[in-house]
Amino acid sequence: MTADDGSTLNYDVHVYAKNEIVREDVVLQKVDDSGQALANVDFALYYDDGTAPFNDNVFTTDTNGEIRIDSLSKGKYYFEEVKAPERYATNNKKIYFEVLSNNGENQVFWTSIDSFVSENGQVINYGVPEIEKDVEDIDHYFVDRDKEFVYNVAIKTPGDIHKYKTLGVTDILDERLEFVTDGSIADG
Image (cartoon, rainbow, N blue to C red; front, side, top):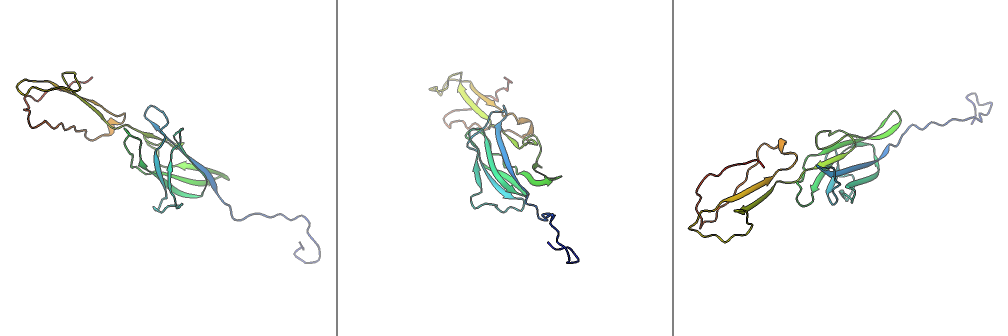
């Protein structure tokens, strides 16, 4: 390269890139409330404006409960759960994160930190309430309409029950039977 005055050559040339390409691997892990990995949970990936970065933007967790997207470019994104495994509630809360460069180091920064999402991208899924009903401790019972029977209804609540506003259970009585008492509620 010639010097500024054009009379000499400069053999010690330094080139500095002006444009930096920021890419980072993103790993989301889905677990249940006991920390066990949940496979086969579907998540859609979107830019924060709601557009999809890929034609096929639905990803499924593997046996380790993980979705891994390699070399995701700099930007703001969110995952949205679209299908949960059987017996689990689908969490429709958007899970926001950002791929950025911080002091020259590329990283993923999870911005939806709360009781469902940790700072390392681990997302908790809680089960749906489970209801068991029996008649006098027998699952299948042939009922005599002229006799009184005790129905037992037990509810196994999920780990995030403290976040519920209400939990209602409706038990529809067969039209051939008559409701006798309000019953009682017992913790167990």
